Amino acid sequence: MSRPPERGVALLAATVALGAMSLLAVGLARTSLVDQRLTAHALEGLQADALVRSGVAAASVALFELGDAPDTLRTPWAAGSGRQPLGAGWVEVTLEDEARRLDLNRAPPEALQALFRRLGLDPALLDALADWTDADDVPRPHGAERGYYLGLAAPYLPANGPLATTGELAMIRGFDAAAVEWLRPFVTTAGESGVNPNTAPPEVLLALDPALAPLLTQRETQVIAEPDDVARLVPGLSPRTLAYLTTRGRHYTARATAGVGDVVRAAEALLDAPGGADPEVVAWRPLTPP
Image 1 (cartoon, rainbow, N blue to C red):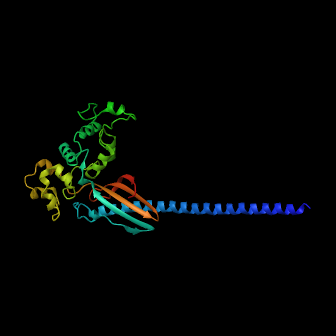
Image 2: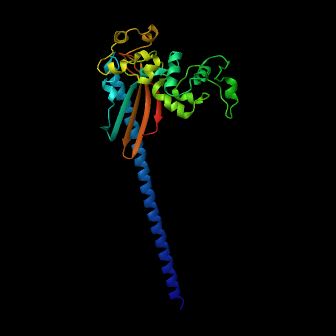
Image 3: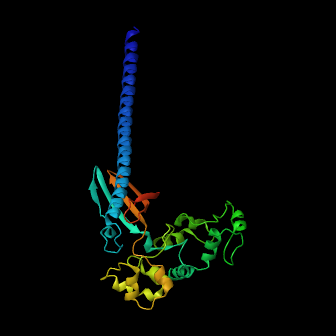
């Protein structure tokens, strides 16, 4: 009399066990699928990173092949590579000479003041910049020294030396993130000893000397092969201006973006590329992909 209920209990137990096994199987299948996707994503990331480095290497080769030729807006690398298929994905590279910018550690102070005015930034910020880089502890009228930075909620010390990167500006009194980003296209800390009249944007060229304005149209049809050409094209320039011109920089910024599948990577490399020698990567900065 007890067997029918026992059979019902056994059937119920078997059904529950089968359901549990089915759920477990589905869970394992989903876990396996997720693992496969994560593995594929990780592989794509490694491949994209490799393509970024390949892009920078290609930029180095392009610079080496140009030798001592002057840098102009018509130099082959100036237009960028565009998106190129490579390996498992694609890569895009842009290259800029740092001599198109004013060096914050070397440029004439009056040129930096003129640049700040042209960009709508307060030239008084240069007091804080000078205090950050000089070795003394005496603040300028609009500057700041050790006492100011140690009094911050998160205290730190000024560098008391040359700027290492343009991003370091964000640590200096008065330089907010917006001001730093606004300045980036026009300033450098690479160590350039002059400005290239072929490639400098108007803001930089006119900050160096307003008398250089005619070059903005002349360089569209003429290559300025050496600083002496500037003296011919713009008679009457001051010796100070002519001495701060160069047509071949030493440092270049290569920006590479690469993609594989759904993964995109980007980086910026500073290349030390003296004419006739193999370029060397001296700084590397990962970027947020565009």
